[in-house]
Amino acid sequence: MNRTLNFAKLWRHQELASYRFLPYLILVAFLAQSAFIQSVNAAMVTFPLFIEYSGGTPPAGAAPWLTAVFDDEDTPGTVKLKLSTPGLVGTEFVGEWNFNLNPAILPSDISFSAPTKTGTFTDPVINKATNAFSAGPDASYDIEFDFAQASAGRFGVGDMAEYLITGSGTGAGLVALDFFFLSDPGNGGVGGPYRTAAHVQSIGANDDSGWIAVNPRIRPDGNIPEPATWLLMALALGSLGLRRAG
Image 1: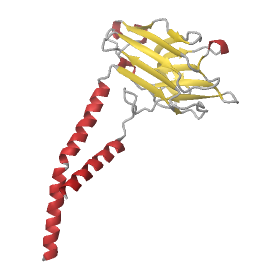
Image 2 (image 1 turned 120 degrees about the horizontal axis):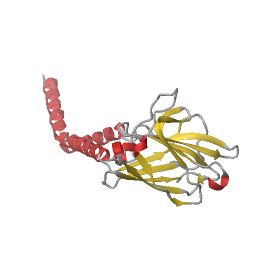
Image 3 (image 1 turned 180 degrees about the horizontal axis):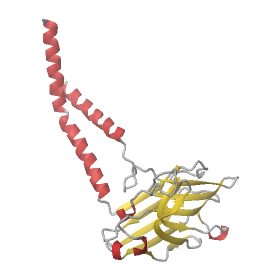
Image 4 (image 1 turned 180 degrees about the vertical axis):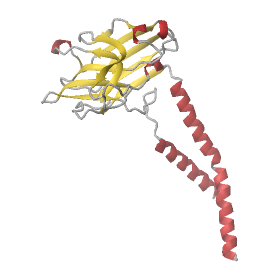
């Protein structure tokens, strides 16, 4: 009889404790939801490229090897794009860099300004067409930056290019999130889909190359949501509530 009563008291204690740390769980859920909403409503999209997906050679430096930032500055119609090479080393350079576009916008309805440059690289040729460009084993992309192969004009270590992208017609309300789309898996592509991909060449002593991309689960702010992180936070806060209840 005593054991039954003790068990009932223990059960009641644990039940009360669970109610006590419930507000902490609600707080965690609120913070997670707020972070997600802020990410989705972002005026800026950041792509840090740190995955080699083609079975080739990853760049030798620290990732992210490349970074692309789209920023509409809360002004629909124009988007600033910055391309940089923070993780490239030695003779490594970008041969091709591809992006996606909102399917509701015709690629012909966006235009790129001449670049503002850091470095002496040759301006890339920018090609635009719906699902027209493959990125190694990944297909298909809507925008292709075709960089120079000649050593004197390569987009490599320390280089940066900034563009102003202007929308018209179907792209009249262009915003940064219009570039936050996955590649189309058509055209026989077996990699991806990814939101952007680039070909880095002249890697190491053997002049190797590799196709790199971002994690497909990346948020517009450049971070990757980790459910396990939120679970640990919930457990930690729950444990705090139980200790106080005890």
